[in-house]
Every structure is written in structure tokens, then in C-alpha cells.
Image (cartoon, rainbow, N blue to C red; front, side, top):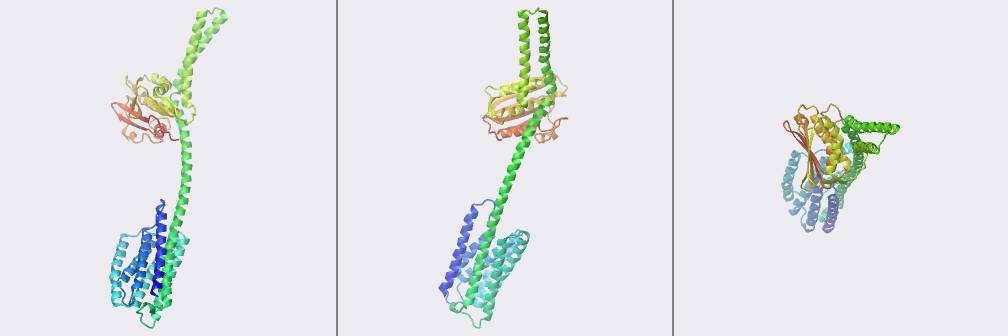
Length: 482
């Protein structure tokens, strides 16, 4: 009889131990959700209690006064039931510090109380006490699970509720079986078969409740994975919309950034076109008069060619800004790129009597998207011009420096204006933030976006005496992120 009872306890201990290690290794591979420490601890403590109790049954002589290991085993069962109840509470609200202290104190009280019953009590008293305590914990679990299921329905929590009801049934059944017994039990062989059946059944129901909790966490992980997949799809959709928005802003900013220069550029184009028109009229007149000498013909044609090349150069510069280029990286000569930007801005620079100072080191090459990098430089130059437009001083100056700094190339655009107001500085690179009377306030924001997705950085320095300086740092081979 003793060996058979021990085998029952060992089998349940092995099943629970297998559940513990299986769940432990499964959840170690999960990052979205981790199992409750209360539940895992309860399961581990229950396994130890079952092993200790099973081993104690083999060696027991007098069941009325068993060895100390029964106090140890029942203390483990008490802690396991307490932790499982705390787990159920943690599903609804965080376990407070006060509850933890109370739980710890109850364990410290239970151990000497049960030891007293072991020494001076009977088998019936100890069994009835454990059945009553277990019933209290099971009622607590059922109450907490009912609250959780009302807020968040779950089949696994329903199964755990059913297992807890069954545990109460078998615990109360053990109590009534002992009350109905007409004699005092002193040896294992005297324990009624029905009492052994109810005890084992209660432990089986307890094992099923642990399995239900494990299934509940697997259910939560499945939901979390589905939610994560859904959120990833939404993020991808938002990123796609962001790229479309940025592309639209890039095109809009090209128009906004060059709109202020359009009148001066039109004036610049009118000069070569007007000169060409005059030369053509003069050539037609000489041809009609028949007085066109070879020397005069060559002079007029050379003049027409120069005017045509000048107009074509301006148009090529504008085309590179307004063209909808593919997002591709190429090797760029910074000196040539700055020269192209200044060709576009030169009419406004001349109109405002601004002195340009260029200090560029040799071999300034960077691999990047030419159209976007040109737009960054054009924005910075255009901002520097705007800073000097209404400035009443003779020495208006814009200084562009280019140099190697470690493995990067650093370009700076400085103006000799009044600097940037302190209240504006913290919002310089924010979207829709502008101090201009016209414009959308996307220029510097897009500059920062372009530079950062090339793997670089952009910042500024400002002082009322020296004006403002914007710095752009780019790696020699930009990590272009589309």
C-alpha cells in the first residue's frame, strides 16, 4: 500500500516537472510575453512537495506521529497553493507589497502550526486542516478567475476554474470521509481506499490547473504574435505613406526653395536671349542689304553662340533641381556641385551685392544622391541670402567651406548676418517651422531628413556678431536609406 501511494505521488511529480521544464524552455524562446513568476514558482514548489511526500510515505511507520519530512512536504504544498492564488490575483491587478508581506508571514506561521499538529495532533486533524486551507485558496482562485474572465474571456481560464471547483469537491470530500470514519487511523494500511482516491484526484485536478495556466499563456502568446504581425503590417503601411509624403514634400520644397530666385533667373535668361534677338535682327538687316562681310558674319555668329551657351547653362542648372530624379547614389565632386548651386543662386547674390567666399580642399568627393544633396546646399545658400537680404550693411558675405574631417566630408555655409533668434533655434529643424513671411517651413526639416538618411548629420552655430553657420557632415560613401 505504501509503495503504491508513493508511486502515485512520484508520477504526479514527474508530470508536473515535465510541464515545468517544457514551459520554461518554450518561454525562454519567446520575447513578446513571459510567464508569471508566481505560477512558475508554484509549479516548481509543488514538484518538490510531491517528491518529498512520496519519499516520506515509503519510510513512514506511525501515521499518527509521522517524521518531520511531512511538515516539510505540507509546507511546500501550502506555499504552492498560496503562489497559485497570488498568480490568479496578478491577472487582475499587481500584487501589492502588503499582500506579499502577509503571504510571507502566513508561511512562517503555517510551518510551526503544522509541526505542532504533527507532534500532538492526529492524522484526521492534519488532513482536515489541510483540506480546509486548500478549499480557502481554491475559492480565492475561482473568485479572481471570474473577475478576469469577465474582463477578458478565455477558455483556458474557464478550464482552470473547473479544475479548482473539482479540487474543492475532493478536498471537502476528504473532510467528510474523515468525519464519517469510526476509528482512529494510525497506519497507512488503515486509510480508506475512498480517501486515497479523493486525495489523488485532488492532486490530479491541481496538475490539470497548472496545465490550464500553461495553455493560457500559450494563448496569450498567440494573441501577442497576431497583434505584433498586425502592427508590423500597419508600420509598413505607415512607412510607405511616409515615403510618399516625403517625396511630395521634396518636390514641393524644390519649388519653394527656388521660387524666390525665379524672377532673377528669368531676368538672367532675358539677357542672353535679348542679346541673341538683337544680333539676329542685325544679321537679317545686313543680309537684306547685301552688306554682310565674312568678318562681321563670324562676329555675329560667335556672339550668338556665346549667348546660347549661357542660356543653356542656366537651363541645365534649373533642370537638375526640378527634375524628378531616381533615388540613386553616384560619386559627386563637391566643388562642381557647389558651382552648380551658385550658378542658380548667382542672380540673387548679385542683386543683393553679396560677396561669395569659397574655401574648398582638393579631392572633395562623396558618394550620395546628387539631386537631394544639391537641394540641401541650395536650401542653405538660399537661407543665407535671405538672412542678408534686408541687412543694411556694405560687407554682406557668404562663406562656403569644404574639408575632410576624418572619414567624413564637412561642408559649412556661413553668412555675416545677425544670427538666429534664441527662441527660434530650438525649432530650426522642425517640420512647418519657419521665420519667413513666405514658404511652408519644410526646407531645413527636409535638409535634416536627407542628410540623416545619407548617414550624415547637420547642425548650426549662431551668434549676433558673426551670423549663422550651418554644417553638413557626410561619410565618404553615404549609407543611403530609401
